[in-house]
Amino acid sequence: MTGHKRQYTYDYPKADVTVDAVVFGIDRERPELRVLLVRRASAPYAKHYALPGGFIRMGESLERAVRRELREETAITPRYLEQLYTFGDCGRDPRGRVISVAYLALVRMDDHHPIAASDALAVAWHPVGKLPKLAFDHDAIVDWALSRLRAKVRYAPVGFDLLPEEFPLSAVHRLYEIVTGMKFDLSNFRKRLLATGVVVPTGETRTIDRAKATLYRVDQAAYADAHARGFNFEL
Amino acid sequence: MTGHKRQYTYDYPKADVTVDAVVFGIDRERPELRVLLVRRASAPYAKHYALPGGFIRMGESLERAVRRELREETAITPRYLEQLYTFGDCGRDPRGRVISVAYLALVRMDDHHPIAASDALAVAWHPVGKLPKLAFDHDAIVDWALSRLRAKVRYAPVGFDLLPEEFPLSAVHRLYEIVTGMKFDLSNFRKRLLATGVVVPTGETRTIDRAKATLYRVDQAAYADAHARGFNFEL
DNA sequence: CCAAAAGTGTTCAGGCTACACCCATGT
DNA sequence: ACATGGGTGTAGCCTGAACACTTTTGG
Image 1 (cartoon, rainbow over the protein chains, first blue to last red):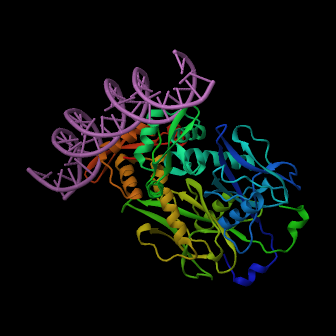
Image 2: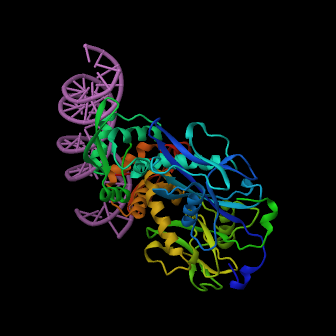
Image 3: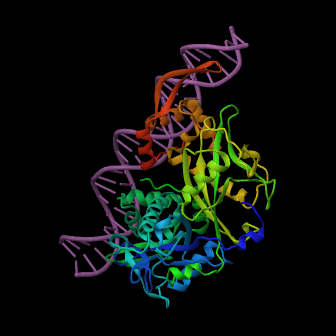
C-alpha cells in the first residue's frame, strides 16, 4: 500500500488471475441438470475435463472476461451471470499461483448448442450426477456453484433463466424438484408460483404427452420486482 | 491456458491482487453499527479513510492474507470472516490494475480495541450512517457488505458474533433492528429466537437501567446446526 | 376404456401477528 | 409513585400441507 505508480513496474512475483464459469442448463428431454465442460487440449491436465475459463486481460473487467471466454471457448452467451466465489489457495494450479474468480451462469439449453473452440478438444453438457474427475480444483467449484444455485432458487426467481421462453407450469415444478432434490406438492407449488405474479399465461396451450398444458412466460416487471424483494419457496 | 511453468516467468503485465476487509462492530453504549477504517498515510488517497487490507503474498491463501493484514494494520482478530465479493474493474485503483478480494468480518467491539499500525495514521470505528468519503471504490465495497450482512442476519445466526459472550435478549433484538433497519415486535422476536434453541440462559442476570435482565449465551451445537440448516427471521 | 399428466378445490392444524398485560427497579 | 424496560400470555387470522377430485388425450 506504499509507493507510487513507478513501483508497480518492478519485477516482483505476482499471481495470475483467471475467470471460470460454471454454466448450468436443463435438458428438456430427459429432465436433469447439466454442467458445461470443456476437454482440455494441453497440459496441465491434458484431456481432462474442466470449466470453461481463462486468464483475464488487462483492459477488461472480470465479468467481461468471463463473457469473452465463454464466447470464445463455447460460443455461449449466458442469460444469467453472477459472481460466485474466488478460489485462491496456493496449490490449486501446478503452474504457479493462480487465483480464479468463479462465476455461476444459467442458460436455456435449447438456445445455444455449444461449439468447441480451437484450443479445446470438445465442449459438452454433463449431468451433475455423474461428472468425471475434473482438472484443478474444479470439482470444488462445481460443488460450490450447485449449493449456491440450490439456495438461490428458493429466494430469487433465477430458475426461469434455465427454461425456454414459454413453458408449462409443470416444467417449473420439475425444475425445482431437480435443482433442490426435494419433492413439492404440485397443487400447492402451482398456487404459490401463480401468487407471485412472476409467471403469466401466454394464452396458448401445447399438447405434450397425453395432456394439454397452458403455456406461461415470465412477466419481466414482476420478475425484476421479485429479484429485488425476494421470493419464497420454502414449501 | 496454454504452456508450461516456464511461460509464467515471462514479463507480461499482470494484475495485482489485494484483500480488503469490511469489519463490523456494534457499539454497546450508543447502539449503532460501525465499520473499522484506517486513515491512509501515503498516496494515493493519502489522509483518506480506507478499508484495512493490502497485497497478498505468494505463499498464503486469500483468507490468511486478510487475517494477516487485519492483525498487522489493526491488531484485530475477527470472530466471523467470510469472503464477500471480488472487485476487479479497471479504473478502481489509479496505480494500475488491482483486483481486490473483499471480506466481511464481524467482531465483538469490547474484545478488541484496535491499534493503528505504523503505516497507517489511525484506526477507528465509524458509524455506518455517516461515513466519510472513502479511498478507491471502498464506499461500494462497504455498501455491498452492508447488504450482505442485512440479508445474512435473516437466515444465518451470524449476528451473535457482534455481541459479547453473555447478553440480554434485548441486545439481540436491538441488534436486529439496527442491522436490518426494520422494527420487530419484541414479544414475537423473543419467542422465535428462543424457539431456535441457539441461545440458552446462563442462569445469571444483570441489572441495566432500571430492569433486571436474564443473560443468555450462544449454544455452540445449536449454532452450528442453525448455520447448516438455516434460520428464519422474516418477522 | 384405461393410464398418465394437467389442473382445481377443500379442509384442517398450527404458526404468526397484534396487542394487552404484569413485574421489577431506580429516581 | 411513576416511568422505563424486561418479560409473559392469548385470541384470531391466515396460510400452508395434505389429499381428493375432475378433465383431457393418447394408446
